[in-house]
Image (cartoon, rainbow, N blue to C red; front, side):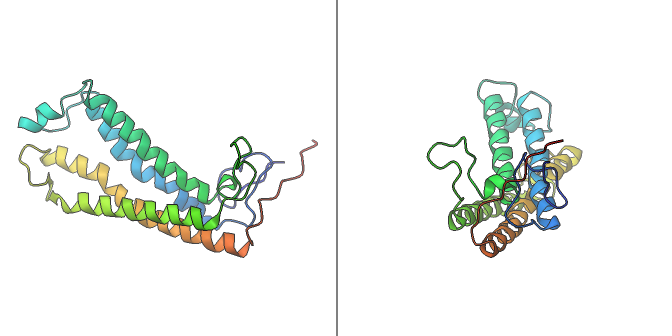
Amino acid sequence: MTESLPGGPPASKGRTTARPVPRWAVWAAHAVPLTVLPSSVWRILLGLGVPMGFSGELAALYDGPSWELTPYVIVLSLLSEGCALLTLGLVRPWGEVFPRWMPFIGGRNVPVPGAVTAALLGAAAVMWLCVDIAQAWNGVHFMGDPDAPQGLAGWIMAACYAPMLAWGPLLVAVTLAYYHRRRRAGLTPAPTAAPDRT
C-alpha cells in the first residue's frame, strides 16, 4: 500500500520519508509554486499578445507575440515554476534519497549540507530579487515609468507579482524543517513500504 506524508498528497508508490514531515511544512512546500504561478501566467499572457497596460516605448518593447518576447517569457515562467517545484523535494522521499533512475547517484542519500545550502542560497536569491522588484514600485507605477501599466492594469500586475514575496520566507521555513528532520533521522534512507498484496 502506498504510504502518504502527513497532511499531504500520497507519496510515490512504496516510498515515504525517513521521519514524518510536519503538516505545516508539507503545505508550505506546496504553497511555493502557487506564489510563482500568478506572475508566470501574467508574463505568458503578455507574451501571447494580451494587452497588459503598457504604453509608449514599453508598449513597443512588450508587443507580443514576437520571436523574442514570447519564447523568453515562456521559458522564464517555466524556469520559475521549475525552481519553485524543487521545494517539494524538501518534503518528499526524492529529497532524501536520489531516485534510482539517476546515473551514479541513484539510491544514495541526498547530502544534507548540499541540499540545505542550495535551498538557502536559492531562498536568498529569490528574496533579494523580490525585494528589489518591490522597491521598484512607485504606487501602482513600476519604476515610476509613465509607460508602465497604471490604474487597474497596474494593480493587476502588482497583484500577480506580490505573492512572490512569500516564496523566499516559505522556502527558508521548509528548508529548516528539512534540516532538523534529516539530522534527527541520522541520514537514514527512506524506508520501503511492504508491497501491497491485495
